[in-house]
Image (tube, rainbow, N blue to C red; front, side):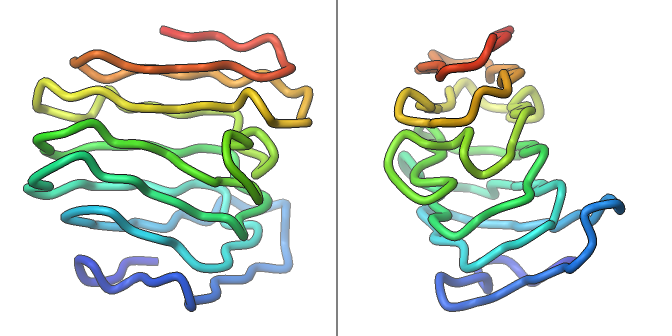
Amino acid sequence: MVGATNTIAAGDSLLDSSTLDNDVLNVAVTGATALGTIRNIETINLTTSGATGASAISATAVSGLKAINISGTAVGNITLNNFGGGANTIGNSGVTTIDATGLTTNVGIVVNSSASTATAGLTIKGAFGDDQITGGLGADIIN
């Protein structure tokens, strides 16, 4: 699934009944964005394009997610916020892999899973800048 830049919104719903496939959602943003209800979309490819400051990407109603890949350009850090139902619970969304090595400017990512109740470990590949990463209950791998 691909939408035009900055067209996804908090009121949108993307639902898939299957957990046995590998759906991909490509999202292009230029700043802070709230994603809507996303269920069983296994991969989100997040492309930042000319973001002029720190950008928070939030998604409180996400489940069945496995991977978040971040690429593009930005001026400030990219924060993954409220994934999985609340602050600092990114692991509760089902995600096990976050890869920000596709960011081409000297920015970092902010990921906090300290309040997650999920026991699966996260594999996090940071960006070129100063990353701020807080793990959760699982055996996390941070590169």
